[in-house]
Image (cartoon, rainbow, N blue to C red; front, side, top):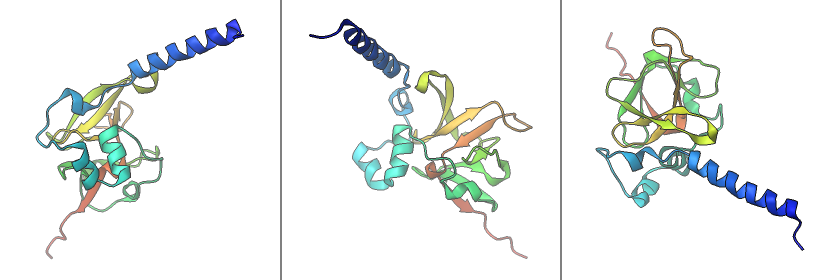
Length: 166
């Protein structure tokens, strides 16, 4: 016979799971239309499994795992999904978080949506052209903006600046 406490705990667990699912944000792709739209199969064929998980499923990488964290050359950080330039190396800084951080995106490069995953409200950042999830923006960054665009490095590709002619 089922113990009443086990039954109540099971019901409470199911409600908790349902509430967590409700708090989870839907991907930006579902809410907006983007210039570049592909089928799930096309995205999977184009991206590595890690890029796909981050860009298309709003995943995240382990802190400190992206080679772009230590990228200090002059150049541009672009979307790994559609190659749209997103951030200048001039706005990159060491935030100590384990993810590449920037204090400002390039003009007309990113969009934002409200992200309610894990029971908190954050601002999700996505590529304005393909809708790929890039990371989140927080208000604890350096001057002049006071913002910290905390980006998943595997959602980005780096294009070094052309060597200047001397």
